[in-house]
Length: 425
RNA sequence: GGAGAGGUGGCCGAGUGGUCGAAGGCGCUCCCCUGCUAAGGGAGUAGGCGGUGUAGAGCUGUCUCGAGGGUUCGAAUCCCUUCCUCUCCGCCA
Image (cartoon, rainbow, N blue to C red):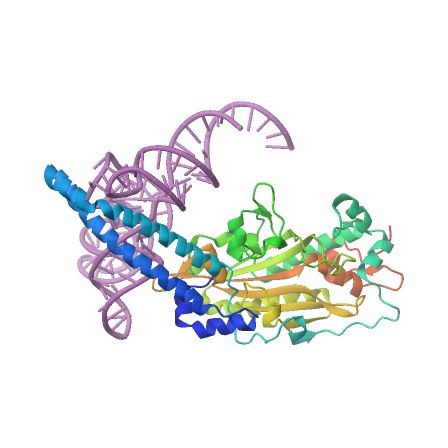
């Protein structure tokens, strides 16, 4: 959510950022709306001032028992009431219209975000590890999982439809191990506080993080007007909604392992096989709440936290700078981590680490007091650390062996009771 | 699900339809006092949107007492709707 005053003093910056996202310029239209609103407010204030002054006099007159004077003033002020009410109504409408438009405006892009329309224009930032060479034809994760008898899409479809999976036995345990490993890493070594928060949230929470109002079709809604979280970014970021934090307690760092629910509207036909794109998946999320001057450093730090997971799992990956056209609307800059998937012979997204600036904080009314004691909006960041379901895919494909078994990565073995290989039961 | 109580500043908590953005307390800031500490005394301390103006400040209008409507010349106070919290009962885990 933008501050209209900021747009007023930076209209070109604002429109240029929109243009990079492929959005038509809107500064002029927004400022015109705001001008009208201001006129209304000024006129309204004048009427209110007169009314308040007269009302005060009426009160004094009545207190002094001067009923005659009170009646005279009453008559004098009578028509102000209608004017004030009409002015209030107009102000409400104009403010609502302005806010509705502002609520849908995507966040400002940082200067170092590459130009481009889609993922083809993303720029590699750096690469870690080399794709392993197999002396056999590596399989995709679902081939491996189904052959092991531990991954069942057909049964899942009977229960829930497409884009669901049933995991069993050691593969189910492997996914659990991944989640535990990541949580322990972030809480013990990266200073994050583990959180269990609601998976079902009010629309206000989704508005706060920016999924609403524009992206309602991507999430599932319940019959009582709650929503299933598409990512625990929603729950974790909203932990600080409507709060006044002290500078000393920042940065706040939260992590959570949760299911995520996505309708995947608009992605029909994409990644239909396997568990790469599901309606339900587990993800370890990291959220940070910082002061404005530290959020960019925090972005690099958080990327490092996500990378630590990949390094620990010893999976080759590359980090991409998302280009303007491929970025989410709420973010100022996003780094994606893409894991090497031998079965697909390509890199696929496994984590996305973003800085939102004060965009979400404004929507949530999340502030802190600076050194002068003045309230300021905090900055928020979030990143997957990492998507557990996709990490399972990456582990299976990178650790597959010629006989179809899966070696267990060293860091996960403690979470698997020392087990080193996953084979058919 | 039934019955009741309540939502007020950073926090706690008073508030009769009129001079209430709001007593008091805590916290915080500054000052005074005391040899240090503890205690004590004094002053200050909400946010949004405008106007004016400045190096910074300041001055000023208005709105905001969960949210949204309404009654009234005037609402923290009265009415309606709604959300949330708490207590008791019932139900389920």
